[in-house]
Image (cartoon, rainbow, N blue to C red; front, side, top):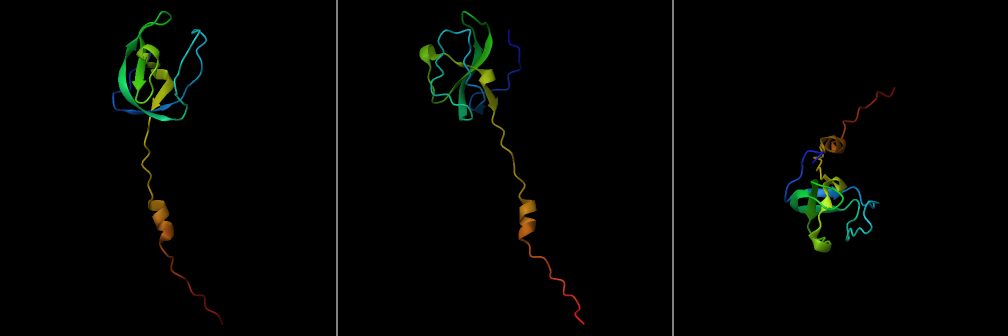
Length: 104
């Protein structure tokens, strides 16, 4: 049973947030998966093995695993591109008018 909503789609960029070892598996080959790296999804779907059933999983571009085993989707989060408003910095570049003081 899938316990989380699917917010992933093929072509989406994601960030790896978990490369920890799952102790339920005697061997676990994560390939060259690195926490903090950005990846592009090539497949999304449900995956079952002898320990877990109907896990939401993804495959990512550039990393292959034995038997084409996908990664648990919980190892990733969608990449969020933040639009930076630079208007505050542009205001800093505008010269201020100098106020002359009366000197008596």
